[in-house]
Image 1 (cartoon, one colour):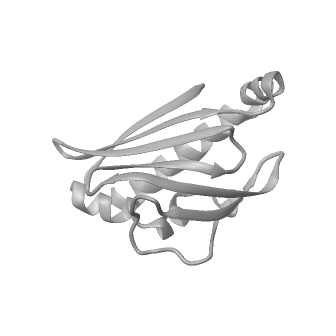
Image 2 (spheres, helix red, strand yellow):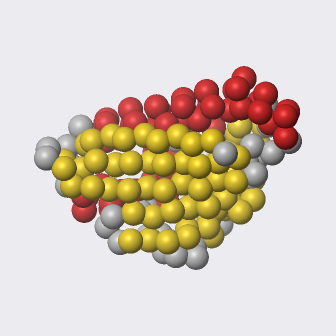
Length: 149
């Protein structure tokens, strides 16, 4: 299993940041445009446990890829976890945590994931999967800084 942890402190209170990250539609604003992220069907104004979100993304090498995630838990105002049900990964667990700190809010993204296809997946991970994920989360970091300063 692989993991990525990204921490970012933003000069905004926890409640304001939560209002942003807990709205599914806002994923469009923090996903690189080349991924052509698109939520399919209806989606609520706020996340809740058991929510299924279906979307399509354009992934290098794979092209258009369907993705279905379930919100596994929500601690309102503080954290939530989404788990891939259908998509390119064998396993994808993404935990989002918000913590008040001096000067703003620390946001932690922790992703635990597995790549399918055994040894071929390991090669794909070393060649482009990890780099692509880093690029996505660096874009997210930049966009959040632009939005919240």
